[in-house]
Image (cartoon, rainbow, N blue to C red; front, top):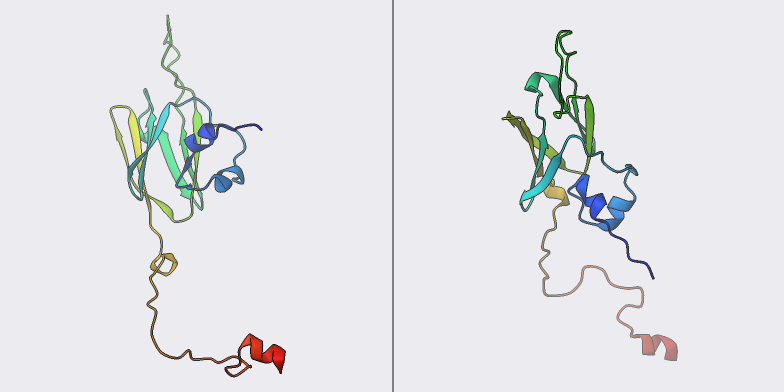
Length: 158
């Protein structure tokens, strides 16, 4: 019997609590390593996605949330022609970062400070979909069966 490590699947999803949702998701490819990112749970129904975007400004980054997908894209303007690097360790290449979201997960806020983009997500389940406790009453049931009070033994005997 084989055991499967689903850890890589958890890195690119937010709000999925069941393994089957992760397996049947629309993203079968793994998330690229650029830009570096963290996904953390900050509350029962709250999450934070942090992306390290050194060298980017907020104007060069775009965040789009649609249906069950959060997409962050970034693109730098062309470097001035006279710039010559002896060593370029800060990646300034364009990127597209995608995260699958569970139903009812919404983007609450996004902040960009000191090269770190933080996107706060919250799961808001509508009241109609939340579990509710049903009180059990006493007394007779409203509907009666066609046997009108006969037990199974009486039906078989008669």
